[in-house]
Length: 116
Length: 251
Image 1 (cartoon, chains in turn blue, cyan):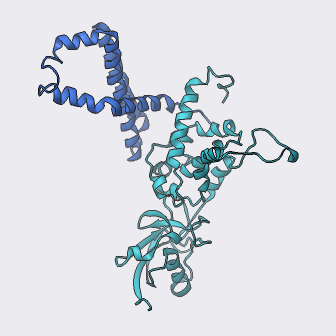
Image 2 (cartoon, chains in turn brown, purple):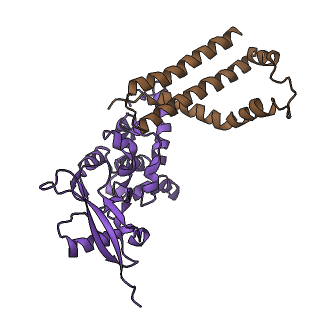
Image 3 (spheres, chains in turn purple, blue):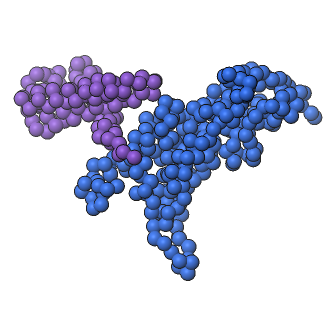
């Protein structure tokens, strides 16, 4: 029996799922509700200058990359297996679109963050 | 006081290879009482209405695993499912999904049995002991690690429930992967390396997409989805650490 390479994708999926469960709702609340409506945080919390400073810090870069890349890999795997469960059998095409999309998104995010 | 007799309609998917090109539905009107199982309904049909109806059964008490079938589209043990739950609308009984029908409600168990044998479903001792050395001791905590998975009665309801097995029969499937875990998780067993060659393949744990319906339909409270998920974690750790652990790469 050939060893499966699925652990690579499953680990990224699991890490993304864990991260999404832990901080996803908090991120939606902060960036989508609290800051725009001026609750709790100062109104300029997410101003360009603040966000740029955040992304220029190495810990900030790692955090932004982790959120973007792992969420993408999680979504890619989830969409892939759901399509499989629903009987979409264009396996190679689905894999290329899902994981390829996550890969491209990861590269763009990493490149952009490095340039800041 | 005797129950007033009630009549329920049971539709049965028939397939008699010598006369039917494909499975056909046949309807029977069966008198029943509240304590009658679906299996007893089928036995009534066989005894009084149509003696050619074929189905497997043995113990009538959910321990032999012979009488699995689709009852109104859900995998059930017919001995553990009661006709009263389907009254007055009636019910439909099919052979287990995803498995080739041999005749009427009997499916071929060949694939299941071949796979079951392939996982070495027995304890492979870590170290051989002589009779004088006595039995292999185990603490209650060590037993808890595998006990629920040892309740499997090989009824194949989880195979009828598993969409992955339905899509791709080369997938080992929930029940047998749960049994593989039952032996791998046994403190007396040393056969993990032999079994995990299959477990770590696409046909093993990785063929599962965590739908979880297997665990819902199990009549014995086994949780195959949990067994598989635990092993995905172990398999993933092994995948990434095999080159830095001694002897790990050959596994």
